[in-house]
Structure formats: structure tokens, C-alpha cells
Length: 118
Ligand code: 5GP
Ligand code: ZN
Image (cartoon, rainbow, N blue to C red; front, side):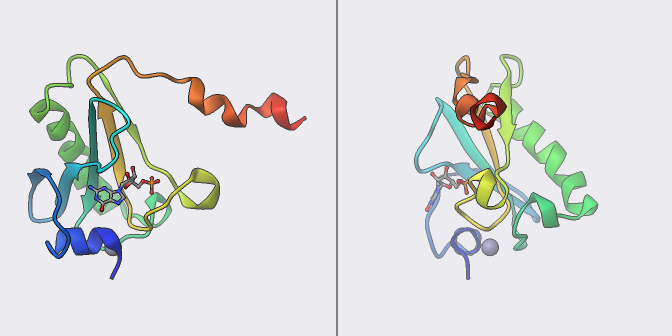
């Protein structure tokens, strides 16, 4: 069973932010922003590339609710999902990073600036 399935089953503790029958949100163990929450489907899905439209239909309002509950909906936030090797996905259970609570940087994405590969 994968790490996040164990978190869903409460075999590994997490700091839960929001939960319903199909989705779970908890604080990232290594936050990259003042607010850094992970939102996952309770069912195991490897990544965004495998997710069904039905799951995404529920995930979208779930993420919006997390933003409201944590008070970052007005100030703004970022949603990221890493996919596979090049995407830097470490945990192979679909998760959306919800980051906010401060003006977020964008520069770190320049580590793969196309001009560096010409
Ligand atoms: P990825 O690199 O796969 O997109 O992101 C995985 C995220 O999971 C990382 O931000 C990492 O800090 C977080 N993480 C890894 N293990 C745990 C854990 O046991 N508990 C929690 N809450 N977060 C975790
Ligand atoms: Zn899993």
C-alpha cells in the first residue's frame, strides 16, 4: 500500500484540514509556503495522467473549499500537481499541492528554462 493510502487509512498520522467520503486534505510535512496543503482522492490513482473526469469533478470544489477554509481564497494561491519523473513526482498517489499565505515566487521554475537546453 502506498504512503498516501496509509494516510487515508490512518495507519500513518497526518494533520487533516478537510475530509469527505472521497477526498482528504492534510498539511504537507515539509511546507514550502505558510500554507501548504495536499489534497488527494481516497481511492488510489497514480497521478493526474490517470485520473478520471468524475474524480476531478469532485476534486475541483474540494480544493476551492480548502482555500476558503484556510483563508487564502481572497489573497490567492497556487495549485500544483507533479506528474512522473520529469514532473518531480515523489509520491505515486495523485496529490494537489495547495500553496499560499504569502506572495509566491515563480523563479524556481526557471531551472528548466528552454534556453538552457539549446
Ligand atoms: P511530490 O514531490 O510527490 O509532488 O510531493 C510529495 C509531497 O509529500 C512533498 O511535498 C512531501 O513533503 C510530502 N510528504 C511526503 N511524505 C509525507 C508524509 O508522510 N506526510 C505528509 N503530511 N506529507 C508528506
Ligand atoms: Zn495510494
